[in-house]
Length: 251
Ligand code: NDP
Ligand code: 8X3
Figure 1 (cartoon, helix red, strand yellow):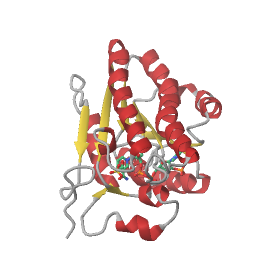
Figure 2 (cartoon, rainbow, N blue to C red):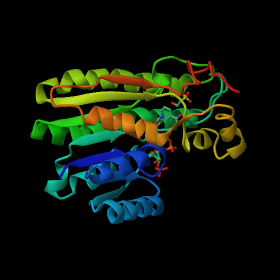
Figure 3 (cartoon, rainbow, N blue to C red):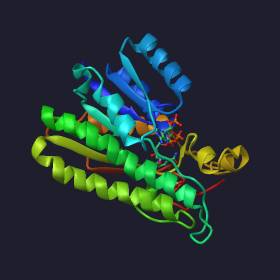
Figure 4 (cartoon, rainbow, N blue to C red):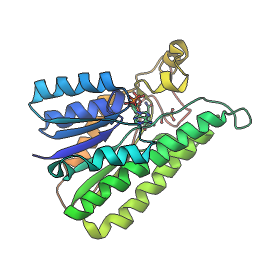
C-alpha cells in the first residue's frame, strides 16, 4: 500500500486531498495543529476507506518538534510515496507601509520555512528509497503580484523558486516535483486572511463560482497518477470567472 504525507490536512485543500488519496487506497500521515479536527478527519477516513492514518499534531514552523514526531514514526511509515506541501496561509491584506511584522513573520515562517522543513525531512526518506513525488502548493500569487498582496505573494514566489530548485536537486534520485498553483479556492483561507471576519471573507467569493478544494485535489491526483516517465512540472488552475489575481468577472 502507498503512503501520502499531507501538511495542513484539517481543512480546505489538504482535507480534500486526504479524502481523495484515502479513496485511492493510500495510507496517510496527516499534519496540522488542530488536534480535535485532525482526529475527527482521521477517524472518518479510516472508517470509510479502510486505510491507516497517522496523526501528527504539529506546527510546521517548529522544525525540532516536526522532525521529532516524523522521525519517530515506525520505519515502514517512512516509505512516503507522495508529500503534499500544502500547509499555508495569508494574514492581512495591507499596503507595505501598513503591514504587520507579526503577519509577515507568520506567512514567511509557515509558507516558506515550514514547507522547507517538511521537505528536508521527507526528501531524505525519498532519496533513500530512490523514488517519491513532492507536490508544492503555490498560488496565482506566486506567478504575479496584486495590490496589498506583497508578502503573501513573495512567499508564493519563493514556493515557485523552491519547486524548480527541488526538481533540479532531486533529479538524480528519481523524485518527481510538481507545483500546483490555484486561483481563488473557497476554503477557510479568506477567514484566516481576515482573522475571523466571516463577512469580509464571504465577499471574496461574491458573484463568481470559485474553485472548490476538491477541484485542486483532483488536479493533484492527475499529476500523481501519471506514468513513471511523466512529470507534471507546474499547473495553474483558475476559476473560469478569474482571469488574473485581480481581474474577476462578478455577476
Ligand atoms: P485553509 O485555511 O482551509 O487550510 C489551511 C491548512 O493549513 C489548515 O489545515 C491548517 O491547519 C494548516 N496550517 C496552517 N498553518 C499551519 C501551521 N503553522 N502548521 C501546520 N498546519 C498549518 O486554506 P487552503 O486549503 O485554501 O490553503 C491550503 C494551501 O493552498 C495554502 O498553502 C494556501 O496558501 C494555498 N492556496 C489557497 C488558495 C485559496 O484561494 N484558498 C489559492 C492558492 C493557494 P491547522 O489550522 O489545523 O494547523
Ligand atoms: C490564494 C489566492 O488570489 O488570494 O493564494 O492570492 S489569492
